[in-house]
Amino acid sequence: MNRHAALLALPMLAPALLVTSLASARADSIAPVNDYPTVAVVDYVLGCMRANGQTRQALEACSCSIDVVASILPYASYEKDATFKSLSLMTGERASLFKESTPAKAAALELKRAQAEADVRCF
Image (cartoon, rainbow, N blue to C red; front, top):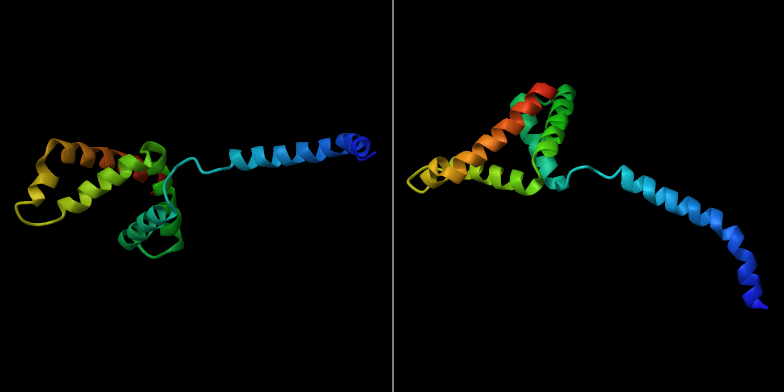
């Protein structure tokens, strides 16, 4: 008897399953388009706001800027490029490796291009 009751309940479950699968598909479609961790996004926006002012307008422009950078560079590339940039600010002999090597120059150029595009679109 329980077996027949379960079969009768199937037509009533179908709409619920459809709604659940549609909700899941909608959640997937509004997922972020980049793979940047929240900490990296916040760090970028805070640094950008330090340079451009602590205003609502700067917040919006800086948030836009990281979104543009993220649309151009995957996070792994951004992380590599930003690391080279950070290490190039060191002083001394060891810093020349992060300023003058071919990989360092390529990383700096890639990051500058992404940030220049972000400046054009957002500021």
